[in-house]
Length: 287
Ligand code: SAM
Image 1 (cartoon, rainbow, N blue to C red):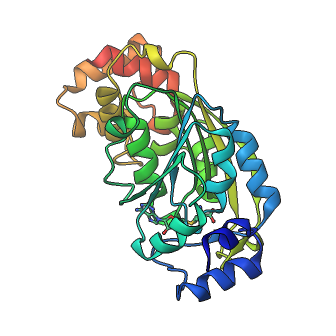
Image 2 (spheres, protein in one colour; image 1 turned 180 degrees about the vertical axis):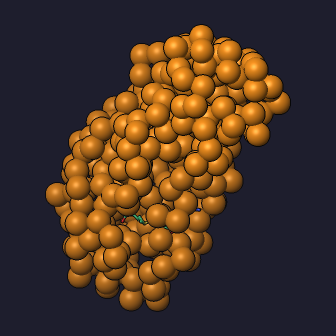
């Protein structure tokens, strides 16, 4: 397909997606979580939620056939699209040919050093229709780095969105939600039915937006220590927090009990009952 013809195509049209795949002799890979967005309405909602400006650099994970990349590019100063599937390179190079602000990086997003990639130069945002199989490790990797993300707009499985949004005491509340909520506010942007993708996945999806809390730059402890405490707290879910922390951190039960009492918490409380703020306070007392 000539470059100009490919650029003019509506990349969310199911017929276009199917004919592009056929033309480049590609079959969507289940293993790589390739469920392409074929609904313009949800694409627009993602772009609107990201509200990208020319001053910002956008990191897009998994451009696929380039639909979201093309939609983001006009407003962005720079888009770095990271795609693991090298088979998509010829197609993406054609589809993105007229967009000099888009950089295609053929890499595993789980291996990328985002600090080095984004640098200090610009404010950065993440926008992605994420491959389901890497959601948790990828979000963990994006958030553990010292990058002042302005926001992250992510299309994820609804079940994962529920874990990101979960409140203390609920069944879904766990490590992922607390890690995020210690520094970000999580909002639902849209529920996306399986029919909005080709091929359709088995489950529904949700677009979430993560915005940094005002306190994000001012954690009283290092993120590394906070996350070590969180990982220890949720390592054994049925244990009390006291037992889970003492089994997984170089601290005595006396030290941990003292910190819990200082915070006005019972010694037999479980990790899933603490708010993110209480975890931050606890981590600060346990340094
Ligand atoms: N952005 C496109 C869209 O919305 O239609 C495609 C989204 S599709 C759910 C996920 C994309 O992520 C696929 O293109 C897939 O090849 C890519 N991908 C899967 N694993 C990846 C990884 N580890 N690093 C980078 N990209 C990956």
